[in-house]
Image (cartoon, rainbow, N blue to C red; front, side, top):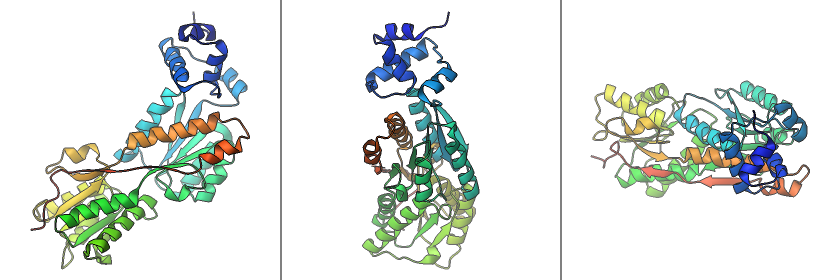
Amino acid sequence: MSPTIRDIAEAAGVSTAAVSYVINDKPGVGEETRRRVLKIMREMNYRPNPQARGLAARRTGMIGLMIPDITDPFYVNIVRGVEAKANELGYTLNLCTTHGDAERERDVAELFASGGVDGVIMMTYKLTPSELKELSEGRAPVVAIDNPEAAGWVPSVLVDNIALGRTATSYLTELGHTRIGFIHGVEGSIASMRRYEGYVQALKSQGAEFSPELVEYGGFTHAGGVEAARVLLSRPQRPTAIFAANDQMALGAMSAAMELGLSVPSDLSIIGVDDIEAAALVVPGLTTLKQPTCEIGACAVGILADLIRSPEGDDEAGASDVGQRVFEARLIVRGSCAPRQ
């Protein structure tokens, strides 16, 4: 016999009304109680009637997540954080990828806005802050990840990428490098541009050389990193260090250096961003800036859940969440960087 709401309530030591609030994502239940009820629901294999739940709450129990690429370990770890927190709070995840294509981003945004989800977490290259706000003013609230320009329009969760860029570049200048190449990600990526800003700031503050010929695009891919590094290392005065805007490109730069007969780190120091699993497996290990990706994803879900549960028309509650939650990246030192020879 299937368990009932009364069975859940008795096991959790709460009222049937409290269980109903949890099932329908309504306010009025403490977070600890909510988690306890959800845990018991899972243990008892309780499945709410989706039609009845939807009619009662006018909700689907689903949240949408838009990301550019499911093959990139950075986005995979964001998804892990989002999914874990969503499951904890009783939501099902609807994941869509866009490959950074503007038309696809708008198609996915319209799909989510049509009412298939209760809220949306968006990682986007092309949608403007005003478009994100327009979506959030419809049926589904929006939280942005890794988009500092969204602040003031919709809630956003991100890493301080300018500080990240300064940290990576300063680490290389402290090792004596003055000619440092930079490999951008995708054109239009705000995260990549902010890391580049930090790179330029650090070069200027340290009196190191800045030259446009030391900057290339790698598209956030391993193959793109290989091609960009080949160009940088073919310069008459090649860089002695390279800062790549993600680990995939940094690993590509290491491959390019090997092709050209250069030793890492004796001939060329390389630093990346993300601390993906492969960063610790290559030889030498890749020095990188670790982003708390799972925490970022979980934080975004928490903010979104609060917005979903806010009473309709509670403008003050919604307005208080329009801002940024900023995380810091952490330097992970391995063997791919060394003092300039």
